[in-house]
Length: 176
Image (tube, rainbow, N blue to C red):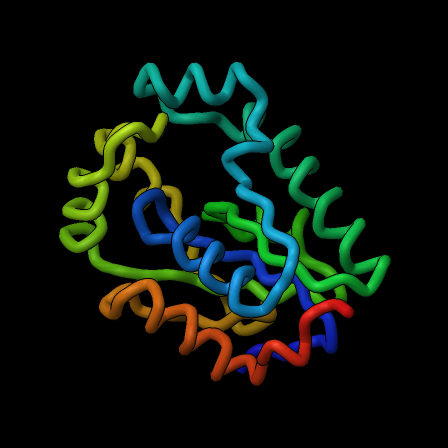
């Protein structure tokens, strides 16, 4: 069970196609919290590389992860809750992002389930062919990390509600 700060920053994590953006948007909307789409913080070179079907290297990811970490820190230091999406596939990536008041929400599902979701997605720079590399890189959160896991078997609205329930959040937790 994750520890939840009074004004947490939730990092919605998982492979591409797990529903991070949809669930994060629903959470932020229901709670009245700030939302950052981690993909929007990628440097243009990363987006171009992924669009071309090339997996990112760790060297590509460090500046992106630092941008997300800066967003998280600005919120936690100000006591402002927020929701940010980030694949955060490896423990060393999450180590950059974690801190007091940060809770990882791991959206997990089978390759088949998520592959089906990706195949139906249009207009996203992450091609379905890169999904296998994401599953290969994925290191599930460990007990020393502040996280909850959630199966992607329900609707996004149900998943958002489950996160709210499991972390004991409600609209009263919204920033005044």
